[in-house]
Length: 358
Image (tube, rainbow, N blue to C red; front, side, top):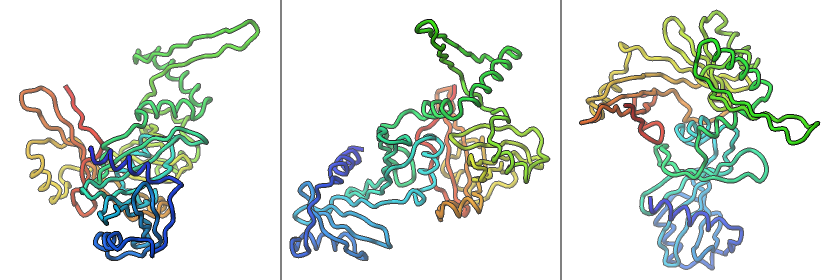
């Protein structure tokens, strides 16, 4: 982690606008040899001098990178620009699911001489002049460091700003339900009258329910769903960031469809029946977590039309699995979330932290 912090600091310093452009003849022989010893198959775009280091701008397979070397030719690190649609699925999904209303301003992959490579995102709320935050992910897509706001706060704040009329309608429905079934929902309304003749301002605090009233779900989403699944019964809707998820049983199999607000289907998630667990995945799980119990086993497929809009070859079918494991000497259970690709190969842990339950 120390190296990551150091590299990030160097990265922040090195991307200034005062880099000095150099000619090839200005580059010491040791520095040119250092570049050749680090990368072999590349096209040189230019040389710069910045913060006491030589910077070679190169392209490898049409991907632009900036290689930082000392005056003696020692390689320090390389920064590769990464298009948002080319980010690993776990990285992209973590951002999309936890930071609605935000945008990725910069995405990069850093190769460090120490071998501690990582992805770096700079994110900010949509709009002009918003505060920027940094997110660091390891090569597998696990979040290791960030100064961004807590995802739960971001989601609630986004929903409160999403659609005032829909929120007000939902609050009324929730209040009615709370009075009827004693669901424990608390709604506090404070009137603040600053002076006579002025309008009252209301501050409403609510806990957002897991299920949405169907009337709050955008018409485009409902139309897209009903076009194919009109006959499905007991359909429950919930919102995840800016996307909408329909949960129901299709021929006895629990199924979830995730839609964008404009009605485009993104993913279809289906529960995998126990007798259909892939043998290769089960063998790998037995080796990695021999004492764990499978709590959830799902197959996630990206819709063809959605994949075309992303143009990301990594958006492929994968398996999502949740395991529970007892902790020795405690009553707690440790929950483990992991993914496998469509060829049943282990992809890594999903999420940044383990979860525990008493």
